[in-house]
Image 1 (cartoon, rainbow, N blue to C red):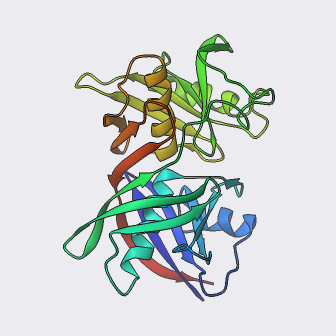
Image 2: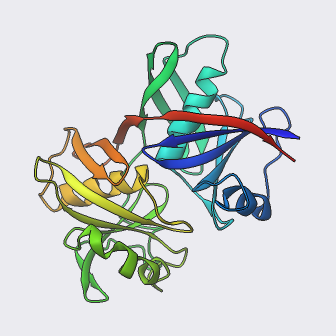
Length: 270
């Protein structure tokens, strides 16, 4: 039997398996089985924590369909919470290795638990490896829509003028559009009346999720490039599961993600 831990960031839920001792990842079949909401635990993905020299660990992101994602902002906050709360002290900052590089996270504690995590997500990228020709792809036509491609270590197609209500209809086809050889996440966006943006993400390998950290980051990058959101200021992004705060440096060299993270339960599986 092996112990697992269930966490969520704004309803974007994950099974965390801590294998820093064995160093063994899980396979695609295991991740699909664990994520099944009827016959398994149920989650948007499996996060395996492996050892990595010079860091607090390496996060491997397994999507619900068994594929591997390069990066996941909500997932990283879950891993940071798990690693920090299992440490002998109460660290204020952790570095976790990901498919998008080693990322640093600042930790807010409350009542002995990690309450909120701010992640320096790295740069917003507008060129390769997003598109076969290298990009950039800024406010370009795609299937009758206008989109901007942004990489946060994983690919995103941001549709600033296509509302969240279209996500279920248009997301499946755009995910596998031939323009994106590794498939893509798709963000459907509209202005938030009280300020900021309202976004629904069709997540590659998962479908519609309650929240997506990298998707929120990519959206604010695209919105800032289009003059709709400010640089160097926190922008609230309303996702179905709640609000994430995103800040984009004026030169796109850093994007910060700030949001809550919660423990749900733990258990054992064969």
